[in-house]
Every structure is written in structure tokens, then in C-alpha cells.
Image (tube, rainbow, N blue to C red; front, top):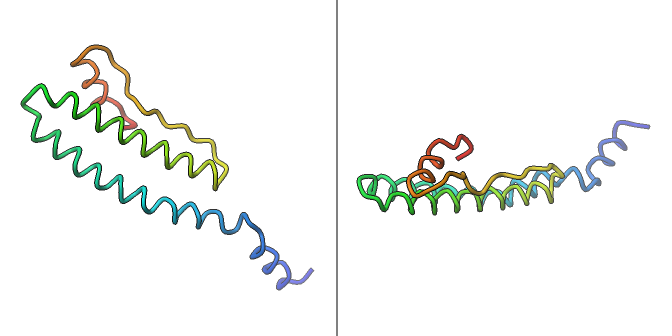
Length: 107
């Protein structure tokens, strides 16, 4: 088998282009994640001295988890990897849930 036929056979395979599809699909998710990070941390910093920071942190963590789940679903569909990120951080009670968000390494 010649080198030319091997190269052309690789160019005709579907698996050659799936990483590019993943990267193209991840670009809008990355843009949303950047906007969410800027808005979420700004809102959390502004409200840090009030009890309203807890719902802001929980909503920020939930939205970040949903974006991560969307990116993981795209990776499962295009790359065939099994990634399942957590959406929530756990914790109990009003202040405990915010502590769990801040202590969560995946967040």
C-alpha cells in the first residue's frame, strides 16, 4: 500500500473530522462560559457583604454546571469520551451550600 493511498484513506474517514466539529461547537460554549464567569464573579463580589451572595453563588454554580454538562454532551457525541460533570456542589443549609460551592474544586 502506498503512502498516498494511506493518507487519502485517512482523509475520507469520519473520525478524522470529529475533533474539528467538537472544537467548532465548543467555541460558542466557551464564549458563554467567559460571559458567565465575568457576570457571576462580579455579582458575587458586589454582593459579598450581604446574605444575597448565597443565591448568586448557587445560581452561578448551577449555570456553570449546566454549561459544563452541555460541553460534556458535545464531547460524548463527537469524540466518544464519557465525561459526566457534576452540576451542583452539595452542602446543607443556607450558608453550608455557599461554603460547598466555594470549596468545590471542580467549580
